Image (cartoon, rainbow, N blue to C red; front, side, top):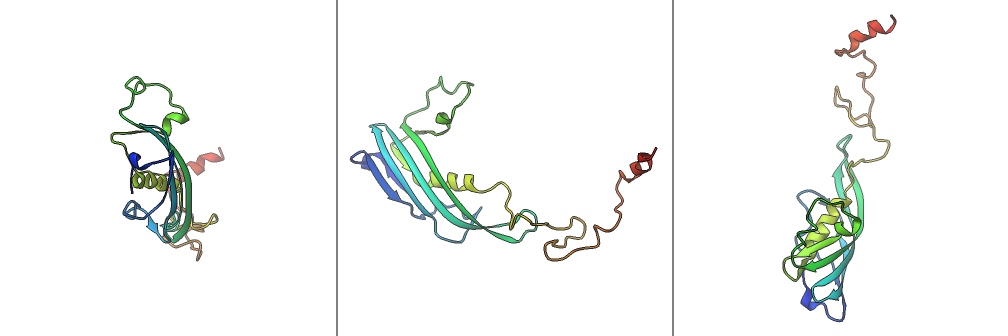
Length: 171
């Protein structure tokens, strides 16, 4: 969804999110439509504030057992958008504050809302996906799903290069 800043009349405009190819389907399996809204508030001729929110339900594999896990993603964001290039003095190595993270420089007076929502969806994905908090995962020897069954691998004394050190423990 492309939003032209020249179309923002009266200081504020609201746009309902449309799924027009922006969603990262190649990385995330969407199971319900994405709900979203973006509001553009004009600050000046070359500056606007874009605020948005979204929610979606996705399916991803559990990082421990590989079973499918359903996740609810949601997020809110705010960007201060300016038309023009970033100030070269700001590009020097200085400490960045939160206001710098939310600053977006536009080459043209248009906002690609799809790119903003795509970035936010990827940021909303958890680092580690779990089907449930108590997931035991897979046995690293035989590969059995420890949530469904137990295996005898844990009962065996496994040989490791460090098992020799057990002899020295008692000395």
